[in-house]
Every structure is written in structure tokens, then in C-alpha cells.
Image 1 (cartoon, rainbow, N blue to C red):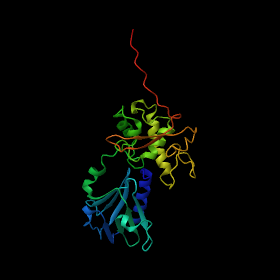
Image 2: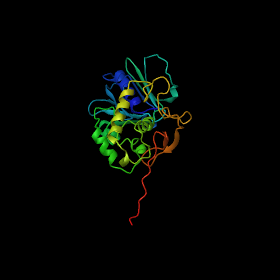
Image 3: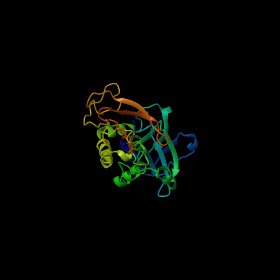
Image 4: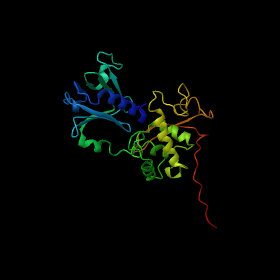
Length: 272
């Protein structure tokens, strides 16, 4: 499932294949941009911005190919003549240089924008957990702007901190012992939660198997996807619910009722 670490690796691989290279083919298979052809242009870089990916080319006043993997998307880098690992009809963008073929398959979002439009496209994102602009204090400030919002929604909102997806949302709440419906303003140690978010993505950005338990071969996650197997720590059946609102997409929510008890607000007592 694509999250910030997955996109970071994709951007790294695309940067290695394309940066400083002249495009010998540019085929954007989206009707709105079907006539776009950057053949002959030089690619400057490929960068991740949270869960968004930008391929920049054409100089300072140039163009961006902006993509978001959503649930199914991915980018592959091939040698010329190498067989693709996905069917050609699923390709949405093909970029070639003398040395490589870069293919984006089933991209949830793919568009071409001018460099001047980049801020409109990704400027709303919060500090990038894997980016050079990471700012923990700014992430905390954004989270605290809505103290009544459930932390399980606030962590997933890319406007607060960019890069956390559903897997990390569930695992971070578990590791800090916080019920995901706890209001942000009632989270016991919000700075620790933000610090842990950064550490987990950093630890996993070079791995193909995502792990929050320290184990890479089986039992690599504490609660995510374990509704039929139980919490890895205490074996309690893992709760599975749906959580979303108008600003965050409805997604599966996994948590351990024993390790992450929901603390109800005490009822008010009338004065005598």
C-alpha cells in the first residue's frame, strides 16, 4: 500500500534514471494531456512530496509531471528491451532516455502542470516526514489547530504532516497506546507521536517490506490487517472499523481494545 516511504523510494529510483537526461520519448496516456510531448527536454529531478511525486523538467520555468499513486499506482524503471512487469494497457505515462524506460502504471492522479502551478498542486501539504523541510513544531501546531478532532483522522490528514497512510496511522496509535478516536487535545504525549511517525518512515524508507515491530519476515505489523489473528502483543482480537470524514477518505481502522483502551470523558457532577 503506497505511503510516504513507498513514494520516497519511487522518487529516488526515478531521479536516478532521469535526472540530467534528455527525453527521447514522452507518452502521457491521459486524454487531457495526450498531446503533451517533452521529447528533447532535459529532466532536472524527481522528488517526493508526502505521497505526491513530481518529475521536474524544462528548466526553471519548465514543467512538472505530477502523480499520486492512490491505491494501485506504481512507477517502474526498465532497461531498453526489458519485459514490463505490468500489462501495457495499464501504463499511464512512459518516459524514455537513451539509458532507461520509466513507466507509471495505474496512477491514481496524473497531470502535467507548469512550474508556476506547483505550489497550488502541493503547497497545501504539511511538513514532509521524509523531506528536507521537515518541521516537527509546525506539524504539532497544525495538529493542535483542531483539538477536538480524533487523532486517527488528524494523522491521516496530509495538511498536518505529509506521508502517513492508513498502515502507519494504525501502527502509530498502537505503539503510543492511544485509541484512534481520542481527540487530539487529549493525546497524552503528542510530540512523542509525531517523533515516532518520523522515525518509522525513516526506518522503512529503504525497505521493500514495511515493519513496525522490528521483524521483516512475518509479524511485521502490530495490529494493521490482524483482525483475524489478534494483537501481536496481547493476542486480543483486533477491532476493525471504518473511519473518515469530509476531509479524509473513509479507510479501515485497526486497533487493539486492550492495548488502546478508549478513555471516556468523566461525567459532570452537579454542585450541591
